[in-house]
Structures are given as structure tokens and as C-alpha cells.
Image (cartoon, rainbow, N blue to C red; front, side):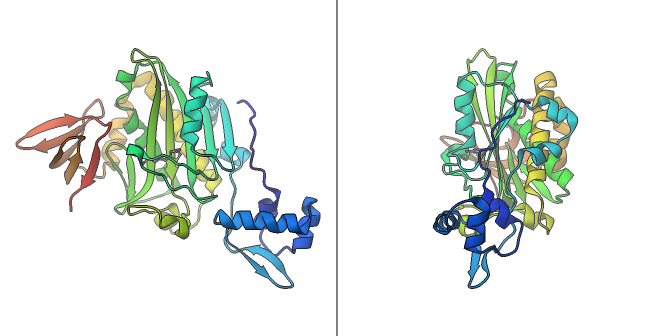
Length: 330
Ligand code: BTN
């Protein structure tokens, strides 16, 4: 793997992250900066949502444990075969969007197997032009660039494969009761736990580059969550305990790399069984919102190409993703 910069080596957060109180003077001494420089940096971190307390006579302390992303720990959480597909990794302290960044890299000949993670996104992109709320050091924001040999028309099932990859990661983490909602929302107890955004660059006749972006809520900041316009969940709720963000990032990247390598060779078939296992809307009443109409019917799983089988008006029609939104009807 190409050794790449981990450009958020934050010595101050590194020290505070160890726990305990540090006076401004001690922090300044350890970091080789003035007390006022420490104070300014603390204000910046506070604005990012990092909660700390300042106690007279004791100093500063984080009020919540904080684990920053580290390349070595992410890689250590991955299987050797997944590691072999990873060509490059970058971790950014702050970026507009990891997907936008890799789409730009895709246009400048970056290699397949290039992963980009961020502690925070200022313009996180969701599907259908929505915003993906991406507060600092709380969740996973991961994008992967992959160059497929197939043409875009053969990649119709890729969003299903990406959903299954997230499902496999959650399964390995021990999450119980999650579901996949076509084409690739990840739901826990009716609330959104993760989202996937696939973006494509290439010619209609192929080959093409895909940037797969995954946002997985790990420990959502309550303040930031106020901006989310739908019911949400995080891994803390789903597991009932805190989990290492580096381990989650490693497992997520592992399953995504392996899924894309398998899809490249064998297409969607190896993913159908796991999709069926986790299909969260199978045999339920749903509403499909198409660009110019809305159809209600009963979801009957997916076909061999990853299209949704919707039964309505006495027959079953296959719908393909794109600008379609699916809502469950209760
Ligand atoms: C959705 O709307 O369900 C898709 C959300 C995808 C969010 C992820 S976070 C990492 C990557 N970078 C982005 O800007 N978006 C994706």
C-alpha cells in the first residue's frame, strides 16, 4: 500500500484523549506552544463539538472519551486479503466531502483501491442531493475509489453489493436486528444507521470508476443530530456499548474492498443470499417515489440484477435504483 499522509495528527487531542486533567501551562509545555495558543486551539475544538471541561486549579479534561482515526489501527483491523486490495489511504481532519475528493482523484488517474476517511465533513453528500450530517470524530465517513472492468450498464447491482458489505460489517460487529432497505439504506429499529452513496465517472461503454461513500453513525453528537431530518440510530444504541471507531472503519473498509473485488469477478450473484437474509422490507407495503409518480405496493425482494420486485395492481414490476426513493408504510 502506498504510505500516505495522516494529516490530522493532532498532538493536543492526542494528549487529552489519554484522559485526565492537563493545565494550559502543561499542555503548552508538552506541545511547545504558548498557553494562549492552547486556549485558541481548545476554542476551535469546542466549535467542532468536542466537549471538554475547564476546572480551576486542575486544567482541561475531555468530558467524553475520544478516539481519533489512525491508519495503523484501521489496517490492523482488516484481514490480510482485504489489505492486499488497499492501494492507498488518506485520513483527513476536515474535508468538504470524501466522495467529492475521490471523484476528483478518479479523474486524475488515481489507482483503484484508494480509500479516504475524514474526522469531519463540512459538505457531506447524501443521496438525492441531501446533506449527510458529519460532525467531528463521532462517526465513520469513508469513501473508496474502485475501477471496474465492467461497463456502467453491468454495475446496476453494485448498490446492493455495497449494502451487503455494510451488512457483513455490522454482522461481524455483533449488531442484531438491522435491515437493508432497497437500494441501500441501512436501518436499525426503523431508524437510519448508515447510508451509501455511489458516484460514477467514466464512459457509457466502460470501463468506469466508482466512488462508494459510506456514512456509518457510531456515536452521533446530540447537538449535530438536530440537523438530521429523519429518524437516526448509531452503533452505541445498536450495540448498547461503545465500540472502537478504528475497528469499525477497518471492518467496513475490509468488507467493501472484498465486495468490490468479488463483484468485479462474479457480479451480483454472490450477494443475493445475504441481501435476502437482511432484506428489511421484504413482503411489506412500501411507497416508491419515482421522478413523476408515486406507486404503492408490496416489496417482493430483488431480481438477479438488483432491481426491486414490486407487486401492485395484480402484477410484479422490476424497478431499478437511480432517483427512486422507497418508504415503508406502516
Ligand atoms: C445517503 O443519503 O443515504 C447516503 C449518505 C452517504 C454519506 C457518505 S459519508 C462519506 C461519503 N462522503 C460523502 O460526502 N457522502 C458519503
